[in-house]
Length: 425
Image 1 (cartoon, rainbow, N blue to C red):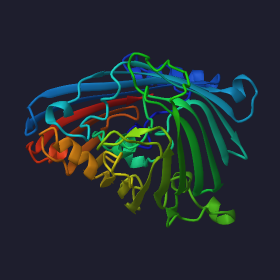
Image 2: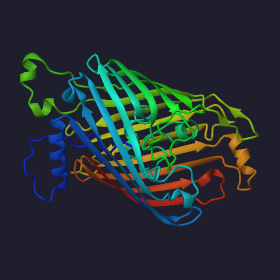
Image 3: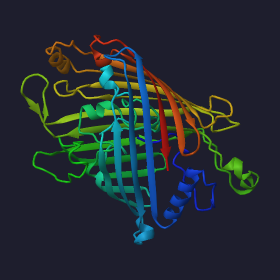
Image 4: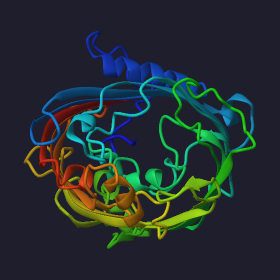
């Protein structure tokens, strides 16, 4: 889960002196800035979500869920004189209940509902070469940080799309916060707007077991591997040329430093795992599972008078052509982001998203034998307004409407009203 907007996660330097005693974010930013100057960059991210479903679902209820992620990036170039090197260590603590259990739907209503305990999370070495054109990670890492994601995926409250599409988790051993495994990752950026990346990760059925609290570092004979590959294009369409010579002198710093152009992100990727998966019908297993995804996000309009005000579209799909073992072979999603819709609030974002997923025929047949109906598709409509209170703090009222919860048609469509609070330092 990424946080809020491009301005979130303030990197205030030590130039801020003696903030008011009541301004806790300013004090935190000041102390973190001092530590960063010394080569240690702490980070803290918190999400809390309160939701209720007054209409539809199996039962009407309310729920609170939360996740706290914390850690530090060690600048080894400053600390140990190792050029281009850093180390990340982190932990996470999550608690609360899942309102989707009372609704009966598969697209988890709260992205903050994850493994509900304290977890040791990341521990990895990061190394860059060629002026950051080539990057490596090695250690306890997750696939979700670097694969199958878009900037927009950090904004939704619904867990079906926040961070990564739900189907990459349902159909493979894909990992994301707060669950990490052993892995290695490489990314090469041949030009400023293209990249290719690859990763190999431990695939294990023990992933996320609360008894281990993220501290099971073993690799056992029954484990497998998860392989991922991705290519991306990150253009900025219509970007104004950088002035030079006499023209540069005539441009004021505030104008020349303002963002211009329409940024976009276009991604395509594949994944493969050799961990055996049980077939839904019969007693057979399949050892080789695979799938693919395609994602896109593009800003299509930006206010020339205030570049913070903009409108963007995003969308994509995932696929896995193995109905015998893939719970949800197909998922599609799309959305829109209008930043600065309300005058005077150019950091706030108005969000809309739509998710739809279809169960595999084999899974549906197996589920129907239990007498609860045959699932086909489930969809979610979501509307949010993300209020950027400060660079570090947000409040996000949220409305979700779930169509065909559980996919069978036996559960009434559900309305979910909620609010998410977030903090990032």
